[in-house]
Image (cartoon, rainbow, N blue to C red):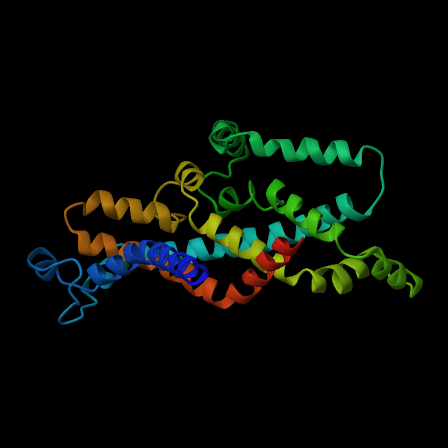
Length: 271
């Protein structure tokens, strides 16, 4: 009975993995086919021969610049969110000041506000500041931490034994020393997970970049891919090339950080 239950679990896991991976594989196969191959063959057929025509067409449409803009925006926001979230989470977890818990829960309550509600106020604010269609319009609304990141880090920081902090303070460590040399090294798994979450979220950001910028200069990858789909809605090989180009960096990032992510999930499960 135990063996059959274990077999059933593995079958379900494999089926779930196949359902997750299948769209990615089909996207890559379609992107590497010529329009004639796609029209006459099966979606599961291996391209014969492989062609990079669709990717060259995508880059000719300006997706290369969109990738660079998106990467720059994502790196800037991720670094900003990590730095500010670490500082804020440490303050909420390890310092004492009047109204600390009330302020934390009030800030956390902003997670209940849908992002679409803030788009019009943000647009009016940046329009008056003259920052629309600039790089700063893409990054400033998101660079100063996030409620989710601060909540996640606060919970993690509170689990670090107080003896470590007491010993470091006896050695003359300042608050910044505690954060840099104690908290951050001990929080690498959760920071890796948070980095991955932030990168995926910002890489896939669509609504605000669509509103905050026009033209191709500061167009991000999601908006550029949507334009490709609108322009080439009958040429699925080109559309799939754009989609594959958007997915590949995220897959590479997960491969790099997968060990840290698994460690973070295991730690959370044990707690």
